[in-house]
Amino acid sequence: AAKAAGRNRLRLFDDRLSGRREMRRACERDLSHALVESALEVWFQPIFGRGGRVPVGLEALVRWRHPVHGWIPPNEIVATAAMAGLTESLLRFILEQVCTTLCALRERGAPDVRVAMNVSPREMAQVSVDEIVLDRLRVLGLPPSMLEIEITEETALDIEAVQGKLAALSKAGVRIALDDFGTGYSSLASLRQLRADRVKIDRSLVTGLTTSDDKRGMVHAVLGLGRSLDIEVVAEGIETADDLETLRGLGCPLMQGYHLARPAPPRPWPRSRSS
Ligand code: C2E
Ligand code: MG
Ligand code: MG
Ligand code: MG
Image: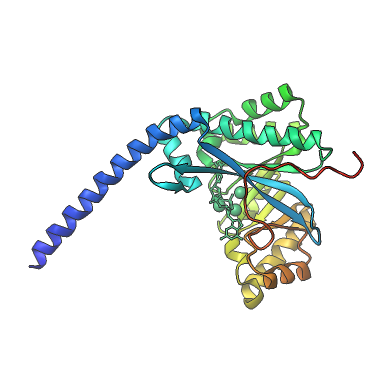
């Protein structure tokens, strides 16, 4: 009986596997259509200064609502694009939406608002991110300092080509942020290698900060590191008023999270009073 159950389980697993493979293949097809038909969207989540109500920045987050499978998580979108050979197309698509928002911000008299774009390790390694990004900014006449590239520690920073791309972006004035900080092992080494302008403290350290001495200690340490290395620190994933208060108390300069604002489709920036 156990054997039969095992066989059944195995078959179930196989079915599920091939079902998944089919779903993947279908998704690859659908994604290329989505890219063309603009079913793919880019939403934005604000980043706030310490006490501020007006955002000082925005993070671009890709969104895809599949007609059958519903919302597909960004990491799945990125993985699907890779399997379908669409890595560069996806990057270009997201960059266009980001640039549209940057143009709108500049026109609304808010050129100091920075927009951050996530770039996956694969995109960083396989695509000429530096050339593509700098070319679009130049063509649109956008100051590179309005754009920030968020990368994670899994980014192969030891690959010369990746270092070269980051250096080119940084030299041109594009900001570099190290995302999900505090989850990897080589944080300090990556910071130096990157000459990062900003680190984003991962949500896992922010959630429950108020009731965890360990987490508070780590966030405190990152904030000190930021001050001594002149690197801006953002706390991400702030979900409660308590955690927000604790972060303010610790002197955290930049904040992001559902408690402050959720990601949302692009909308007009409030006109600055001077314009
Ligand atoms: P990330 O860059 O660390 O982005 C933060 C994620 O946390 C986002 O999820 C955001 O919606 C979510 N978040 C923000 N505030 C809160 C909060 O208070 N509580 C909780 N529970 N979550 C919060 P999302 O949009 O699902 O993205 C997940 C990851 O996928 C991102 O992590 C990023 O690594 C990647 N990603 C998203 N958009 C893109 C993109 O356009 N390109 C690439 N390459 N990767 C992307
Ligand atoms: Mg990010
Ligand atoms: Mg993050
Ligand atoms: Mg992440």
